[in-house]
Length: 269
Image 1 (cartoon, rainbow, N blue to C red):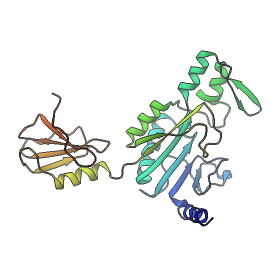
Image 2: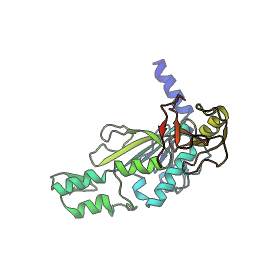
Image 3: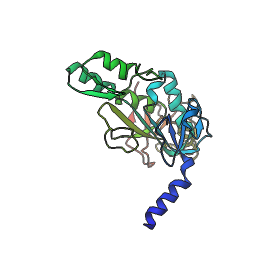
């Protein structure tokens, strides 16, 4: 009993560190609930993106059946905002209709039907698929983009998130209704930013082959090493460092996340 009370006390104390985006009629306990409709009485009434919170002010973001109501460009901007407001190590949780699964069942002409409003919609009928999922004309806010796990992962990866985990489409208690027609991913913001990793490695490393000191660093993986001597540190978007030295320019030194030198490998021409 004391452990349960302690857990509840911790949840209450950290409510301000969790955000439920697009809460509508389904607010979450121990979260700041955000919605654009003031009649839903959210703690934060706003249209996102942007998210009206400070940098690194959250530990967890939940957005269930929200992303598909944004244009593709706005969805990418929203994910970038999630990255901004999450503290290092924080997580974003996204649930969307699983367009691949929906269309596979439509193509197969399955007998599946989805209840919405006061009727059942047969998935074998393209009009029903359009009305419920592709355009969602049955809602006040239509769908503006379609997603599946692959495109969702790609978008989240592009925003800087990693270490993806699947959200259980049937059993996750935060989902309004468990069902086959949805999918979701949890993405984690790295404990350290790419820029910080690059800076720390620049300060600490010399070339382990010839001893040349590091003379520059970049978090832009497209940057080229300088023409003058010395070693140059670059960090890719998932935080993995690579070292390039003027003395042997075709040799790349790659380190793992624990800072251990991997076997040197030839760079691509």
